Image (tube, one colour):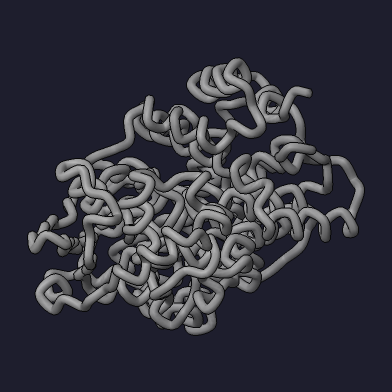
Length: 469
């Protein structure tokens, strides 16, 4: 008798093909709209990053069919896959996009995924290419891709991430594929071929964390997923069981899966609702956020200045210390994976946003000097508690001899147990978009996203994201 895991491809395609807007709970729609607003801001914020600029420049040489908009200060229309590639790269360029939560101790936080940008970037491009896509249809397709990607990320064995795969690039491809396949109205059989194609296109390895290539993993996930759906719609065939069996995605890239986390689980419940999604307060890995908040709390409580501090020690387990790997950041890309920088920013600027994540700020003399007074240390007691929560402790030694200690809160800011308020989310969008949109334009975007289910055509929202000159 066949094992249950060989039906995952079929279940993912069946779920996507059958999902209807009226199946979606009010809570799923509420959170989805928050993720969309967050993702749109991040695409705008990352549109002028060096990695995005290079990908954009190279894409101009590949095609001139004006199907979909690559957003930014000078928006351009390109073939839909290229627009998805550019916007997807931009959306992850600041490393500020939302994070899927794990639910079991053996699932390292980093092995899961950034769930919004691949289906959002691919979905925006496909909606513009097709034309006339309503907000309801877009939300349905977005949540289909979001759910398939999250369930795959939760089910695949932790070896996938431990071996060095970047899940936002690999699993993100399936999310983008299902969102675009849903918008195209593909049949269940065509969606299975889409997943089979995506299984061969899914890519991204962790050696490129802290470089320009990491954001491109997400851009390529959007590009590859959208392409897989377009090909299937044109009659292209791949394995109809691309996720399953000894040669399928789960086994080849992860050494297997946990069937209990995915078989019969699509939409039961939607992952976006339970266990939820983390919308980041800071443009760096979510693993660092509780430690940054702990540091900021000490800075504010004791009104600390850099000159007051002799040393800062961050104690944590390997789930934080391994991926957050740079002892000293030399540029803003490395800064996202450098705990000494992140804690230094909290002490020096009492914030970490668009202005702090620049090469100029990272290389400044005060920041470089402060980083050399911050170190990390492995704590076996924290490690022994497991990885289902992000745990750390900040210890600050002051020059007057005092030692201040703060444990990170397990219900960290931005997570579903301590979410950003709507006002916080709009403030983040403002930080992301202030170079491109004025206040009136931002208010129009807020209103359009808040009423997305009533939007007649997604191009109305896309047009509001273009700067007005």
